[in-house]
Image 1 (tube, each protein chain N blue to C red):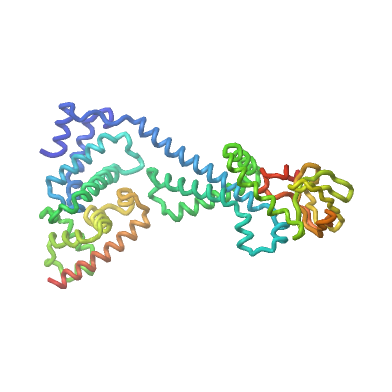
Image 2: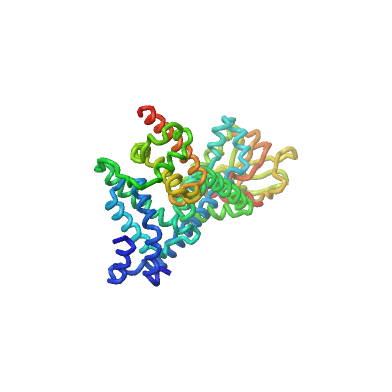
Length: 244
Length: 178
């Protein structure tokens, strides 16, 4: 008796039962692709924040710190966001490979496409001004995230090396009063030769980095370069960033 | 169609059972009765999950994949208990495999038996044996092999090339002994 005959017999006697319904398979497929979409979105958003941090103008500090190139890169590299993005990328690739036709593509090609898409879309997101929103949402949902940013101001507050950071207290015709994270007030002389970003407006409450000739006794600074606070201080004192 | 009418599955079973039975025996060396048990279970799996069938695949690739996975799963469990391989003496596929290797074939025609080829195949790593069987004995295209083994086309090409080289080497050694 062939297998087909045995099947026929089982059908006749009602032993075979009905095939599994279609909806669990459809639901599973939807859940699968939705999970992949979620991880892609999370990965792109994280890559966007990472790119946004990396594009931060940190040359004031970097110039003053006189550190080695790799060290500078490691300091500005937003490890947290890069890690989140990488993990999401790996999970998305794994889900893709487990999908019905995922096996048809080479892993290197899929990895390269994923990396390119994450970086390009992330950069587009950062330039569209959405990255700081993502960071705000992350800080809202993840309380430890704010704590991670807190130790940063000390790195930017080194008067003996010629740079300070703080909130603008008041703005005069050629001077700025700056309050540092310790609450000390510094008088910044802004001469015509000082390098101030032309597209930014300095207003009270905004956060600035200043490099120049600094007197730690008189607390008077002859500003050479003025820059907005680094993005890594988004949630850390001192206060709000320089307004665009 | 099969979901609403179970009888519609029977012609499919009838159409594929012979070649799938041969396939199971070729990749595993199971005796006919064991291979039939594996095949029946595989058909039952296919029937239960017929609603999951991906219409972008050929039905043959889909059913081969199910049979392949079940065979490999059973084979791995029983591998240590298999004392010797069993082949169908009427199976001409092994000669086709030998003929597919010009170098290996040269000079050994008529000396190598299907049983000897089967033994060489059985000594090859599992992956090599599978791709050689699918490519030469089952005469599946690279795309179909990719769908059955769930691997990209380029990878299948590489696997087949390596498996052919290993097979040719093994045949060379065997014929030198003869």
